[in-house]
Image (cartoon, rainbow, N blue to C red; front, side):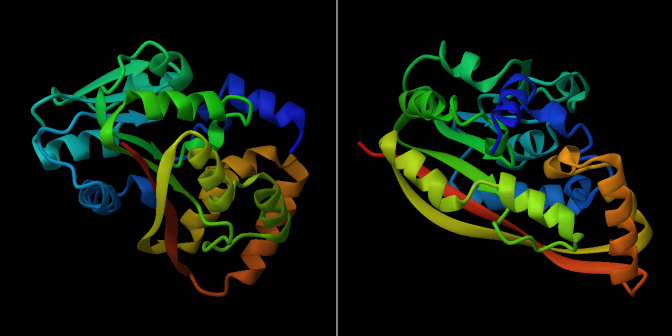
Length: 255
């Protein structure tokens, strides 16, 4: 990975992909409900849990977790991008525009039962991740958990060849994150979330064209244009179907 790419990630993590959760299955109400329920179950969250969502975007999943649990204390959602100004209006969630490292550096020790990275950990530069995980460890309560959800190293959605190459160059492996978490003193366990996607070919190609996934932002206009033509030829049906999978790393604070 180039140093230039790392710098751009550090400066504007989620601005690399402003459309990442817009008009895709990630915004579908059924998906939001399912992933929120999965997180609550996996982390054994209750109404009394103190929860922080790092990189919450528009806050759909954040607010759904808060509603499903009927939390006693508002869930905190932070994001460095201006997109958070359009976050869901909910009395059960407290939103703030700020980056994760700056925020956690001033949070009191043992503040949270759970800290969540839902497809945002890869946006943090490699230079910042060690310090960030040290703060995660400090800010978790004893036996608290951090959940890191990332796309698997093998893409499960249809993609053209050049985009796959860039994805493999950029994507963090779950094994590398386990090493980083272990160095911060966190015990780890891996789980998997899966969601069946059925979307029209037209809408799927439109999502690709909008560069809704972060690695697509690194392609030239020509690469994207040629890739769309390649994918259009490859997809024979008017409906695109696949399993959207996420690797889910539970990082537990060891007493």
